[in-house]
Image: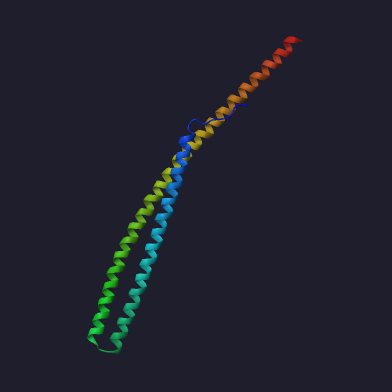
Length: 146
């Protein structure tokens, strides 16, 4: 029996590698998003902690410098939280872009795999026809001899 050779195998291999690369990029984008979200949560926690210290300072004494320092700390942390939220949004966009690239790479690979499957089915049919023709020739040769 002849060996099946898919003429577009190199392209299929390349598409599989591109899909793997897209998977890695997607995973890295997800990791960056998760890190950005964790950093945002840490900043929110620090902001809440600073607000609690401000409330304590307001209740305990009327040290104006201490209160002003704590108010400034709260305001600075609010700015950091807003900036980090923008980073999270940007990372979420990157994840979505990576997801779209991954989906496209998967579609392309699957397309070439389908082409390979169809080519293999055609190959098997051709082999079966050739085998059947050979059997028919043997049978007619035997009947011709008898």
